[in-house]
Length: 248
Image (tube, rainbow, N blue to C red; front, side, top):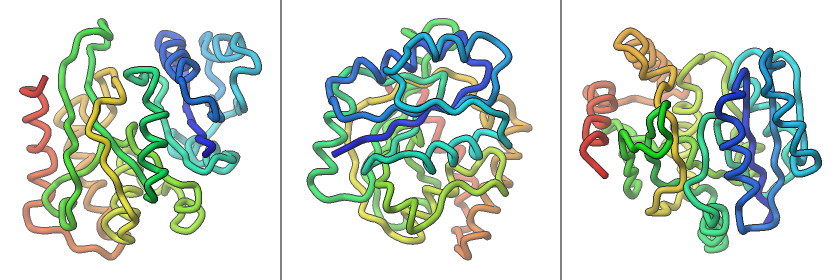
């Protein structure tokens, strides 16, 4: 089973080496690693190029945002399964992809797992723990969602159900998981282990203003899919994150 991993970058020189190394150090051998860089102005591109043919495919050009770049990566991916690892995140250990593949071999459309947030200044300092838990029908209406960097999906699902929508600026990852899992009810499996370390500072969580903006985009995600949330969905979603600060 071939796994395509896509990393999107822009001016990520300070973090991208950790990301790349975590992919290249995987024990699973059949990996296609795709880097999509938005014409970075710092040393990101030179760092990527320093890995030579260890990078399967490199696209470097201006794009219309992170989700447009992700779509470019998905379009050129040739793997059976696609995973997306952001340029300031890294895999937790060298057997991540091997463990993910073992779940796919049991017949599923997608796999997700747990994630920890680490300090931007110290990648060894855990700030929050996102224990996703097992999905149940109706979980999205209760404010649930899986951590997107842990979300691996068969390419055939993207081909059938579509890619990221550029109508959303910060919630397209939420929308695509809502569409795949809640609306179309793809076969979903949970790997109960931490597989990704994410540096703090995500665009939708930096401030209350951004969190409110993300909430408005979440509502658009439901509407564009013709779905009806519960009256408390958009209250429970941000509140569910509070428990992450107390899990270690």
